[in-house]
Length: 104
Image 1 (cartoon, rainbow, N blue to C red):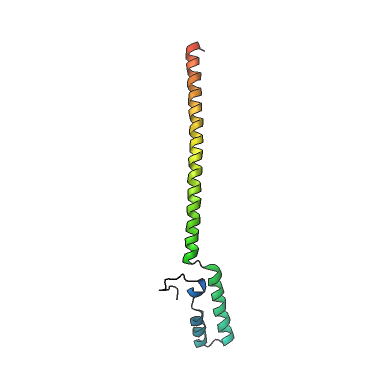
Image 2: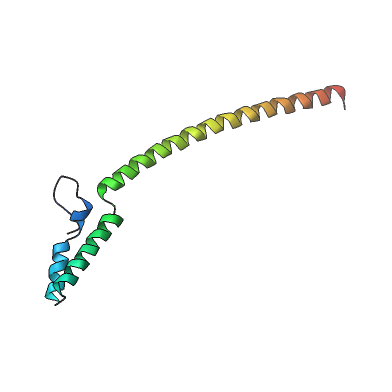
């Protein structure tokens, strides 16, 4: 049962049907203790490894903040670069004019 028709968030534990796994193993003639242990292990794996919609939503929000920070940093560096380039352009122009005036 990987999806839910409920409106509330689905927990990671609800994403796997451990009881169904247990029953299938029992039907396959696995011992009760082995069936319980396998179902428990699979439930723990799902709990620790899979992302829920809430996890993805939180990650999306974090990425939006990072994106915003990166854009502001790029704008700041762009402004600094533009100021440096304008300074260099003015300096080169002044040097060129002085060379032309004095014929060096």
